[in-house]
Amino acid sequence: MSILVVAAHPDDEVLGCGASVAKWTEAGNEVHILILAEGATSRDAVRNPGNRIDELSALAKAAHSSGDILGVTSVRLLNFPDNRLDSVDLLDVIIAVEEQIKRINPETVCTHHSGDLNIDHRITHQAVVTACRPQPGQVVRRLLSFEVPSSTEWQPPDSGPVFQPNWFEDVSITLDRKLQALEIYTKEMRPWPHSRSFQAVDHLARWRGSSVGCEAAEAFILLREVC
Ligand SMILES: [Zn+2]
Image 1 (cartoon, rainbow, N blue to C red):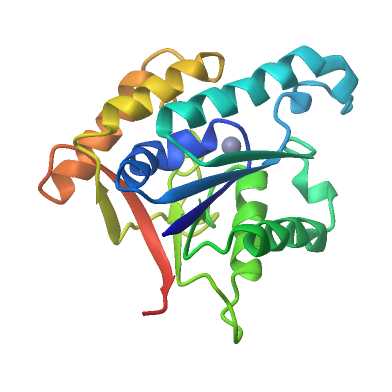
Image 2: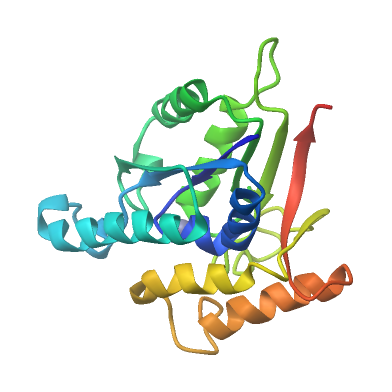
């Protein structure tokens, strides 16, 4: 089976579903990662990728190295503007996702939750849902959204849909690989008790696991499945 993970930023793919990816690749599935926005350039008041060449190449390297740890088949990085996806026509983002779907024919696609605080996450969700619309001939059979610590839980309930998972992957065996892959992104991680700390990521996986009676899990919303 072929699976596509569409993330807004380098690190979201690991935070959102890294342990599941490790489990899926171990089981012999092909997992492809598509990262839409470049990262780092939102740290400048005016976007100038030239100012951030070293950080951008470090992030790209981290995406490939963490992908290797998780056993993915491919990592593709696009250069949409970081934390400024709302400055791009939505259609351009949709076309980028559609092109990758055409290239790899995934049966499952995983992406961000529609109610995240981060604007790029919400636009990525919108683009993926549109690219995966169930018209005749659509290859995507299952569409999942994941949670990203420090974005999903930071959205107040009145400001966006709350993340209420109904699909869980038991990652008791592969949670360590997720944490290893996050070590590569250590610059994006924060000290405890920030929710994007190593401890919080571990605690969340333990909580999601205990919610469904296993040692550790990653939680998703099943947006659509065509069987
Ligand atoms: Zn992100």
